[in-house]
Length: 182
Image (cartoon, rainbow, N blue to C red):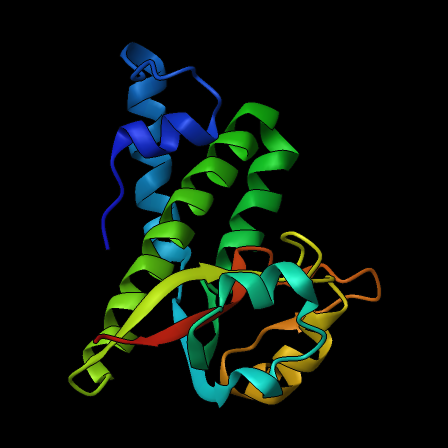
């Protein structure tokens, strides 16, 4: 799994500028540390659209024309959270950089996950863009049931706090529609 410096700089809110000098060197060093700390995992399950928990109107509109969807959860694992906490104890800047690197790796992992799911689809089907709880009117509370349906504490080590934050923090849950190709 690879991430480009421009992706990390986007999460650092650098306005499209590419890091250089000491910052670029530190990003490279910390990228190596994140790579060593992460333990990517994922789980998915195909369900009928009608089985999606508390979908709301925006998700249903997004899934228009799909009979099925794939519920998915991906994570980089708890090691990235531990690394970020260790960095925060020494340098707030390093903690921020680790957060940005982790976000870029998480996005890349979810893209790879979509590719893996798509490879398992039968001919004549394709995936549409993923949609996560918290987007539109799909409530974050839907994550409870979504993660339960995927048994994420057991399968990939992802759970929710009482305030609906995912643990480990570099985790994503989503529904991805399956559309028939005419």
